[in-house]
Image 1: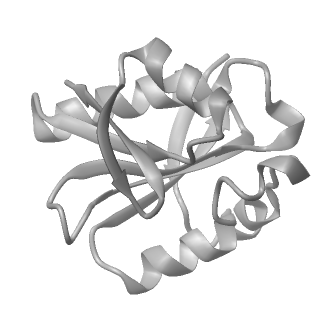
Image 2: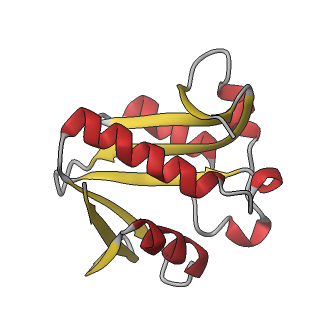
Image 3: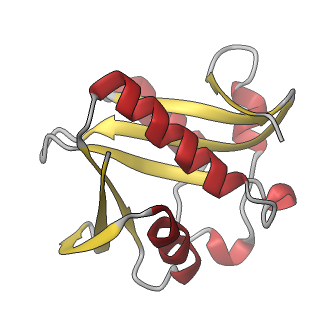
Length: 145
């Protein structure tokens, strides 16, 4: 598995828009189309496509939240065809390395829908901890880089 991030551009945005999650996961993550539009019109949002070699397998986005001033992962999705193969875990670990390299040893945040046990277990296995805080009806998690 050779996982790399690429910026969303003219050559790959349609492929990214076509990625989907399982129907039961749709309530947990915004569509890639919405996320790409949001990144186009809001500041401090950084969308990235996730590739295994030349094959796009997912999408993630991180940002500097304008309200809290926290760096956070605000999107992570792996296309339904590629789920269960470890891509999500490796993508998060690579993102943490990227954030630490760019911003140093900071606290890095994400949030989960309370009923999204799969995401919670993934993030906890990497080292994220629940803060007890609720934002946007989601549980906030943090990791110290």
